[in-house]
Image (cartoon, rainbow, N blue to C red):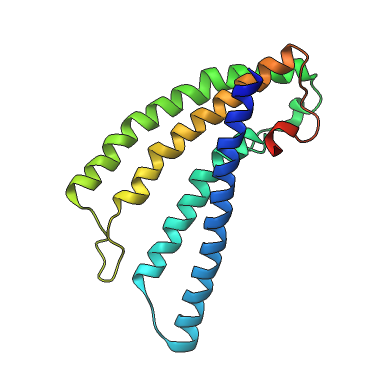
Length: 177
């Protein structure tokens, strides 16, 4: 079980690294857009669309990483004061009841969504826009499958906590190795 937890952590850590890379690329892209627009009065539709594609990449790949690192949004009014075993039960129930069904649903429909875009050769409707819109659309089912892997990591971590082999204090050392 610890091996599964570490494997899930490594996969989602790679997602986090790719999300960081996309964030840096987006930073340079926005800088380029601003300089070109205000200094040279030139606008590139393709570069503006690339900003949105990079933002979507940051969000879609950052979510599995945030889930694995327990950094996703939640109301911590009660959660912070609970014991590790209660947190483990809540995390496990949350993954089984909410994460996995949502992951299956979006992955299932996302595959046909992106495949249709690929078959049609979908691109930007704007002149000078980006072609191959199926690439960013295919990231939707891929990222949700990765969220499923993060959900498996949440469940294995919860099981390890329930067995007394792990806890929720601080950073999980397995995620850093």
